[in-house]
Amino acid sequence: MPHPSAAGGSAFTSKERDLIRWEMGQRFGQYPGLVDGIYLRAWHSGPQKGQPKVPLAMQGMLDRRLVEIVPDRIGFKAVFTEAGIQALREMAQDRRALDPARYPRLRAELGFDDGAGAAVE
Image 1 (cartoon, rainbow, N blue to C red):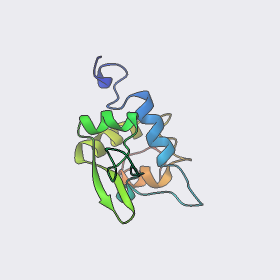
Image 2: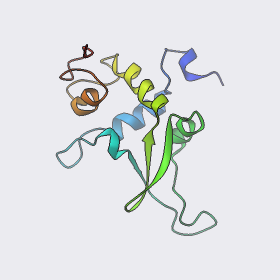
Image 3: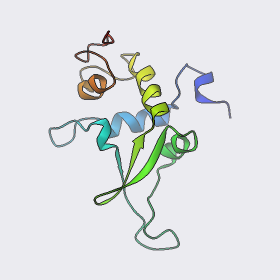
């Protein structure tokens, strides 16, 4: 399978972009921040008991070291590495990929001004 950046110029596959948009969208009236990461559930039984459940779309990002899994106060979370944050910045350059109206906090944290799509100088 070719690397996702070879087709379409994105470091993320379409499923990975969908996961990012889903997880970084507004929840309970608030937008999560980059530092919040993406919450991961843990296996409650079986041979992987106590380990994080990693969605298939996230496994590719983990394999390419765009995210890393760290313990959280109630389980685990996936946080973006420096390479992952750079890939998010590239994704945010396309307003269709990260709509400024739906992801203002994430865009601001990535160095875009008020989320309107222009990078901060």
